[in-house]
Structure formats: C-alpha cells, structure tokens
Image (tube, rainbow, N blue to C red):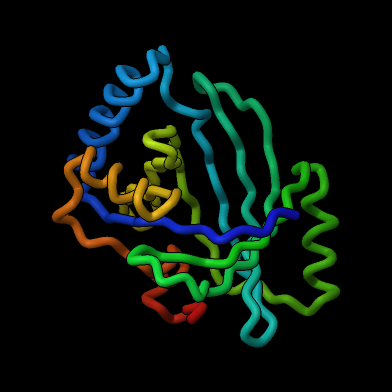
Amino acid sequence: MTTRIETEAKIELMKDKFENLKLFTGKIVTELYQWLDPWKPKEDQINTFYRNGKDILRVRESSYFRNGSLRYKSVFLTCKTPSEDSSKYKSNNEKEIQFSSDYKRQILSVLDLLNLKQFFSYRKFRTDCNLENCVVSFDEIPDYSRYFIEIEGEEKDISKVIGKLGLQDKQTEKRSYLEILSGDKYGMH
C-alpha cells in the first residue's frame, strides 16, 4: 500500500484548447528531454465509487495501451481524505493498493462483505507525460464531454508548469471528478 499527500491542479478546458495544449505539451517535453515519444501508455479507466456511511472508496480499473495495443491491466483501491496541507492547489491524503486485474472479482466480493455499496461510476481516458518534476495528465471524460488537464507534483513545480503551458489565467478546480461530475451530490468534504 502506498500512502502519500497528493497535490494537484485541475483545469477544465474546451475540447479545441485541450487538443492544442496536448500537442504543445508534447513538443515541449520532446525538446526538453529529447524523447521520441513523450507520452506514457494511454490509460482507459473505469472509476467506480463505493460507500458505507461517510467512507468512500474508489475502485479504478485501468487498461494501458501503447500504439493501440493493450499492454496490461490493473485494479486500484483508493481512499482519499482532505489534507491539512495549506497548498493553494487541491491536496489530499491518499492511500492506494494496486492489484492485478485477475483479482477484480475477489476485490468486489470483499467490498460486498464490508457492506460497501456502489453509488457512482464514470469512464476516463488519460494520457500522461512528465514535465518539470510533475505528472501532467490530459483527461477526457467522454460520457460528459468534458476535458481537463491535471498537474500533480509539489506546489512550486505545479505553478511552474502552469506558467510554461500558459494556463496562469485559468481557474484551478479543487473538487474531485466525483464532485464535479455528480454536481457535488456525493462530495467527500
């Protein structure tokens, strides 16, 4: 299990700005690091949320693709709680366990035993690259026609990436995707 404080800036963009920024970011990363392909494998995620009272657990099924071919699958169990960190960006305490996708059925059985009930789910396509000590994620949420860039790292590095990508005038979002997509109906805070 990994335990960490996650700090991120999430910015919603219109589709054309999202696509142009993705191309621009790829060029910056290629020039900086001389990589032929700056992108990590594309990830297809199914995020499903379970709750028992106030406690919320996310089950993420991730399939990773490179050049259109499936490379591997994983299942992540994640619990996030608000951090006491005073970052100007969103900050959470995160506990996460990764499993092989072969264990999905057993994981769901354990959730049922714990009386955790599914209450929300969404699909997200994510493409990541590294820039200035941050992970920069381009997230497409097709069922909602929404597009986000998420920058995760230390606060100073996040600010540097936001400036480098020309996003300093954009509002950062502190809500989770669960809160955004459900209209805060199932908020964690």
